[in-house]
Length: 460
Ligand SMILES: Cc1cc2nc3c(=O)[nH]c(=O)nc-3n(C[C@H](O)[C@H](O)[C@H](O)COP(=O)(O)OP(=O)(O)OC[C@H]3O[C@@H](n4cnc5c(N)ncnc54)[C@H](O)[C@@H]3O)c2cc1C
Image (tube, rainbow, N blue to C red; front, side, top):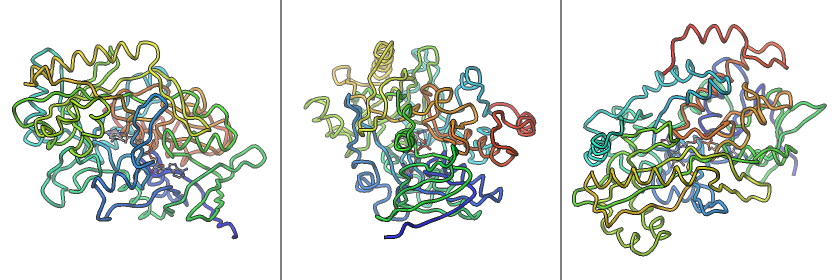
């Protein structure tokens, strides 16, 4: 069968927050953008936002594990992982600018204003979640209401966001990158769904396009600029298949556990996820209120033992605090398909100290100490597989002219906090760079962009 062929000014592979933002900004600037997304647009399907949906549109029906047993939920659909995210927003970590010279304060402030990022109004933060936060405050930990990509006023029906919000938003209050994909398409970008990019095409030492498959048929797409935005697992795989041996060597994950306990009063499962949180920057972890959705709970708890699994019957009284650890770079995504993320250095010790803090908070919030347990580790932010300073420069450019990377894989260190606003900021900055670029080979952001950024206001 003959190969399908496409051509464009810019090819973007992947429609998560990195790819969707870039496609939107470039299309609005008049570039001919081809956005290639491996998954489908699942919005509007009857199963969107249900347990069935979560099985259908995640890699290996959500049964993707690292060698060490970390469970990774890897959504593969238009909008990427934001289709199933908790809607939390955090500014980029200060060290990104200080240590790596990546200043995206203006871009993230612009996105936060555009998307009206803010904590949920007080009455929607949840009674049990607020009780947990109050317990933490009483113990001296400065928890704060968590900023969200959620606007309850947008809800198409009653805002009834609970833990199920992580299966996909059904009420419409939560933003996802699929909306930026819509904006890109409205501005003239071409979106091809079920189009999986396999490798980049190089000619005379520069990148000239990509090859892949769509609906069982091979395609080749050509453009003078290619941006890989297939996520922390997808992007290194494309690079490995294209001869970049360093891709995927080492990764960050924000390794996550939940500390659970059961009290007498209604718990947090029916409340919006992560309405309160605290980042302990000195120790390198983040804590937030969170519980697994009802049907997921036993699947996770059973890996811990029969006792925790049998408590499923008491799910309505579940209290939970999530720990996200800013983990050290280790393991990686390998060409064999395997993923590895061992705890190294001081990871385990910092996680243990965070667990102690969570236990104290939960008991203070009313959990019975005899019911406390820590879930198995999971990998929520696969990232850092094509790191700034290792495989891409501060402008996200690879060593091959014309080839850029713009997603969580470029994080030079684990963020240890919500990733999406940082990724949007990186994409907005790269879009400016590509729009204003006059000559290939420029290594710095053009002066005009830097000045514009300075005049756009301070950090978030
Ligand atoms: C359950 C859950 C809750 C989360 N909660 C939050 C939160 O509250 N706040 C926050 O900031 N972050 C959260 N995150 C993390 C955040 O969603 C991700 O870190 C972020 O979406 C990563 O963006 P990305 O652009 O790097 O990649 P992704 O969002 O993973 O998007 C990559 C896209 O590329 C596509 N793709 C993959 N391979 C190919 C290929 N070969 N060809 C073409 N397309 C391809 C995929 O289908 C996908 O659509 C959460 C994640 C999960 C799983």
